Length: 543
Image (cartoon, rainbow, N blue to C red; front, side, top):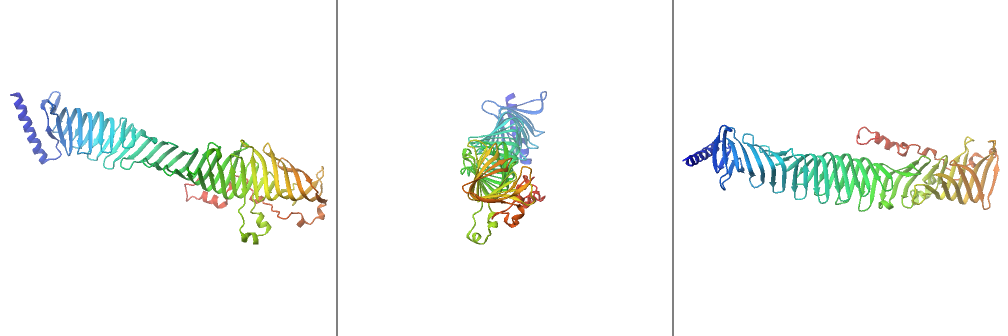
């Protein structure tokens, strides 16, 4: 008799449910249950639905079916609690299993806990506790969760899933595992259909041969391509690239950087800076422009090299730096200027070149106009120029070894005692040696001419020495000419100063280029470059 009463009650409940559902589609439906009972003492107003045999409890609401071993259904509240191998399905696109589930039919919110496993066609989610908002199609968890899709394993301490957008928002201790890379972040938005991630907060991406750090950015996980900002850094091909904005593309083996760019070569202990750079891994090359300059260590001192464009090529063990147009160099005891520069770290060689003259320039330019295009170096108060200048370091050491100048080698040094006198030496070629970083001696050969002011030990001017010879040797002291020795049939004389016309006191091709000499780091840049740098309309450029 008792069993028959239960069947009648269930039948009536089913009829009532169908009736109320027809009137109010938001009411939760009881579609199936093995048994029914009530316990007003322990569960006031609850309909206790339980499994019996193979018949499990089925509750349905707005397209979602919940199957469990036991449910406590509060019809007045339109709410139920389910337990025991709970299965939540919504059409054929979402399936979730858990040990327990609470569901509110009024606001469409659910809470599942205990080994929660959510599955969709393109991904799965595992966590301990998961919250669903069916009205907004949002799911979120505040216990460590793991997402697995076709390519990645994503983990975080907290997360939110926007079902309509197929978007995850991962928060706290975010980790992505992929066979080709590993990502850690404090916050990351991930779109499952496009495999795109938006990065917020400190983030690291470690690939097969690259490391990326940023605090804000975008990354296409499938293409391994992205933009990175806020303290962005890429460790790529044994170069560390920093900038206000970085772009990286793994398939093309390419990276670029904008504004406050720094490329650090950890192998060769050098730095290149500028406001725009491109790096091509396959070609072992980097191009830096817009206020570009490099810093190399030489003689335990910083050697600054500025150029309109700097290009680094070659593997780390044989890296070559080229500078084009407007080259200037600055070291505590050396200054320089040229049209282009070549630096080979492996053999320890720096070359300064001028831009070749075209046919028309060769015909119409004066000697002075031609000579002013020659590269020039200053060692202390000595100015040295020529068509090509080479600075060599000792093999395997960052230490100056020798100096070579080819074609119209010209040395000028302002006489310290006279008002407008200049010591001058010109020849076809020049060869010099360094000792402890300072010029020790120079040999000037072929078509050598000298104008030199001679003084007594008391400091009185003896006269001006004008000599022509085939070769001479100069000994330096504190980067100044201290002694000159003539070789191979010198022809010259010493004349009193007042007996030599002022126009004859300068050798052909004389150019005193002191006004071109950079004295500070800011002197390395043109006035226009500095104005652009200081332009308040471009806040991305910083001093």
